[in-house]
Length: 393
Image (cartoon, rainbow, N blue to C red; front, side, top):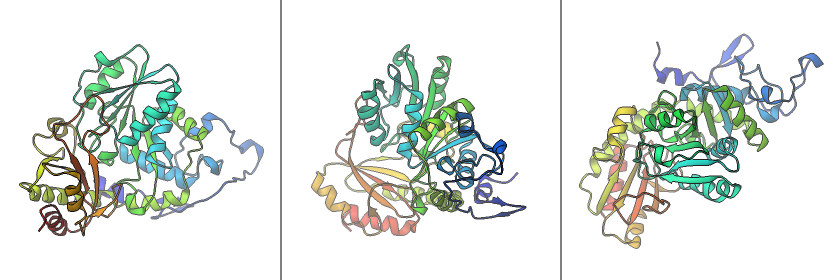
């Protein structure tokens, strides 16, 4: 049995006639020509959601997919532990396709309070306006029963949570939801198809922003919705098609090249993160440090129980420093760059106001937070840069 690293490295193998090539080709087509009318695939929901044994099998209209997009979707589904994948142009559009497919006017959705701010904006500005009731619950909740309503249709989780990485008891939440016939959706982007097995832990649907670790080094924006259930796949695939959320074959070909190095990158970044966390201990002015691997971190025991590692996002909260002082320190970075996003080769710093987007939970620390994404630079260079910037050395 080969390791996951080996299997990941070989995901890009693609059949061309009787042979295979190791690099996914970008097959671009809007028109597909059939040999006769009997072989003309009908334009219906079944055809749209069908996944064949090979990437050519269900190629019938380029506007809804080509062998390139099919092969990449199958690769992502396999990595995530699912059997079906719907691709979308971004993580946000994958989320929109999922929730708009599963919820309608009059329904109720339960959402963890630590979801990323873009998810919250969609829920509050779009989904709620369409007549769906949105209720947020604290990330430490393990019993959903008090929050459920007769019209609850979906539980939406993000674990670890955004910015401060609270870990949820996903198996317990999914077990409760399953008893009531409620669909569970997990934003599993943090785990990068490596650190957490969503379907083994009970989730029905996994939503991924492939823009992060999966395809970040390729500079590609893309998302995916993965499941093991044909019914859910068909429903979400149909919604994605109705919304026109199609992906470009060239982007998939580029993303596959990045995907093949995913495990190697994560291995290096885990080592870097361990080194940086040790080096940050005792840093002057540091009020709190957040990473699920740290003893005492919110949900640390759940992380040890359910996860197989941790990614390279780290958050620092400053103590006794005003906004101007924090900005002055961050502006001294030379190796770490300032910018949004994460998952690529460059280490990045993003500032945020602690507890800014939450409504029913919060952390004790106050003030400015600094989220660090640790990329592929030399760990010693990163530590030296962090110390000179944050301590004024």
